[in-house]
Image (cartoon, rainbow, N blue to C red; front, side, top):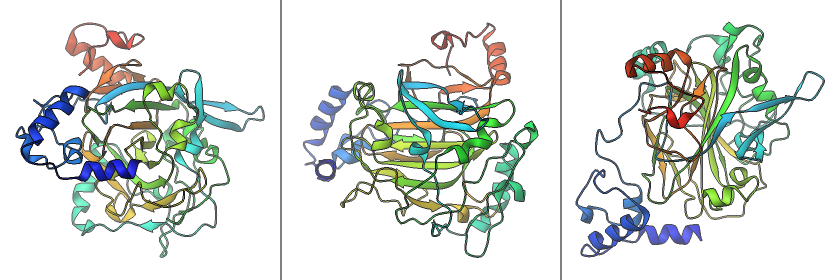
Amino acid sequence: MSRLWGYVNSLELPIWFRPYGLKIYAYAFGCNLDEIEHSDLTTYVSLGDFFYRRLKEGVRPVADATLVSPADGRILHFGRVDVHSDGSGELGPVRVEQVKGITYSLDALLGVERPGSPQSILVQFRNPDSETVNHREFANVNGIEYSLDQLLGSTSASGTSTPTNTDSSNPSSSRPQKFGDQTDASVVEPNRDMTETLKHDANVARHSLFFSVIYLAPGDYHRFHSPAAWVVEKRRHFVGELFSVSPYVAKRLENLFILNERVALLGRWKYGFFSMVPVGATNVGSIKINFDKDLRTNERGRLPPVGTYSEAVYSMASPVLRGQPLERAQEMGGFCLGSTIVLVFEAPSDFQFVVGTGDKVKVGQRLGDVPEKLEELEDKQLGPLNTSDPKKVKRE
């Protein structure tokens, strides 16, 4: 069905029909035609071309915030990831709320690795050495460490990475953990849970794991942007179903986000672990990542077992950062229709969201921040911010 819809989307529309047909679509789904880059609707040769439209420069101002919205959409859910102990001092299964009262496994969403698996695909980039100076500046400005062996692991000739040990009892050792031995881009079935990956991140003194889920409706702008300054180290592509991810379905179908096709982008930012997961939906199997031309989604073929994935690493993007650096609000990809983005990240425990469930958000709008930044915003507004009631917070 999704491939058929993709074919229909790619059909060239008669020039005379484009203004009428696209205006009808815009009216039906609430698209703001005043924001689009090309106001002449005849320039959009197909429905797919219009779905993936660009916006005019300046229509999405970027807040001076630690975390901004990666997309136009609606907040489905957000909060702190509950990490429970099994009673022996070890972490139990880590679960995230899909909506109020329905949870799913974090290891199933992001994937885990199996020791001894073959090597990942190494994505090639054009002349990364020429960007060394810029990448060092990026690391310094955004508080991302780039040269310590205990942070990056040692890279062997074969391209595999060695995980490192950190002392989670020391707050200064908040290092994003490497994700184990790199695995092949052929399908790999994980056989251990995400607690091994997240043990460091969940136990760093005064740090917690947080999440946010943003739903993109059919009328929304469908490109997505970086929610923070971070480095993407790898991607995991999970082939899966393409169920609707509308709020109605999310409230009724358990494990929705781990059943659907998705691309988990894993990396680090100044506070540690950071991940962004674009999730496919009905008619939206095609997920594009601008810096990963090898990624192919919504392809024909038999579905692999749930939880299996293909993987690629981005260490060739930067000899300094060992990953793909992204600035806050930088465009990084998109969907071919509406879908969902899930963020899971490590941050100081006093990190606060300034949005509410059900809120409409735009690219670059403040999603949350650390207290110091919120105090600065409060001073600018000459009034206290009530972050306990996100709807009373004036958002940028």
